[in-house]
Length: 474
Ligand code: ADP
Ligand code: MG
Image (tube, rainbow, N blue to C red; front, side, top):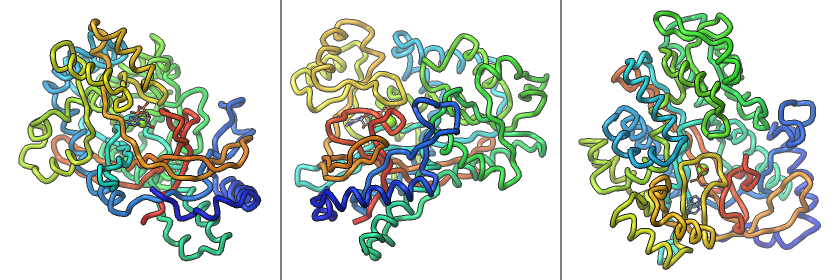
């Protein structure tokens, strides 16, 4: 996408001065992260990296992403309830991927014992990039859906005022009012509040499973604050605390430090490195309870890249969302090419194609959190190594999306202000609540735009690659 800030990007002195004003406004608005040096303390904080200018996003694609979000909520919920689908889809993956296998073990254990939970809460974020069509027009293509610990809904509500400020400084008041207001964390809190209410115990708490080192604390606090404003109390505990002080009563109600827990909200537990043996035990304890888990183990599995790939198979959406052809069409329109690497002819062919045209593909393991995917020469080497081994089933292959780059400044503490060529990734936050078989809430609650330099293939804001941004609808 071209930029309308073109001439502004030429004037280095003006960019410097604008950047200073933008950073001060960001700090004042609470666009904050703890520092790398002190990730467990708020004594010293800094601004979360962000773009100097909002980036152009076609209104039609923004609307399309919002319009399909409720369908994605339904789809994730349907997958999470479909044991046969999960089992079949993940059968080859769990043979080769230890982390997915452990999650799956917990899933099976809970199924065997019987699911105690009756209220289900999904807080997800579906991420997209804008693929350039052959005729030059952009198309919305899903990168992935995050069903656990989807972040930046809090900080994303603070950045619109920063970009309005920048445009107002430039006397671009008409442009400033085009920046959309956005409050995903409020919507997420309303989902948690609904689940808490349906759990039905006035004194029960929300338990936020937190990491010891958490730079993104202010993002999480935004949700906690919204809940407290509704008189719902949140306690933050680590897996280790749960393992030491958590317990189930005979009705499998979850207690932490003697207090009943209505909702468990995970901001940890999505990467292998986050689990010690003790943490796995704590996760199992929580999953066995009747507390509302966000997400429950099945919904976490529904967010794996292997599931994403299988969903793109012909007929799959129709099977999972019967009688909903319009939802199916909206979903399918956002799918990029996704290819199984399971042993067999189909996988062989996908590998052969990727080796012939490496720049058109991305190789993805079953991991979250950024920085795990392989591109270009690295992908070729990995495919050469994997192609005759069953290990390849722990990966999927995906069509590489190539958005049109544009100029913007990525503002980071300690980095010089300079214009770089960038691409953006749009995320839409979705919330749903189900009680038994009845869906009692299904909505979209806001967006997140992240922008990164084109030379950085992978990674999000937390990984230090992308920065926060706002869509400027055109
Ligand atoms: P993670 O779970 O680690 O966030 P993602 O699938 O979101 O994994 O990939 C991480 C990053 O890699 C994305 O934010 C995006 O920048 C880039 N990426 C992922 N898939 C593609 C793709 N198909 N085409 C282009 N870039 C991609
Ligand atoms: Mg991602």
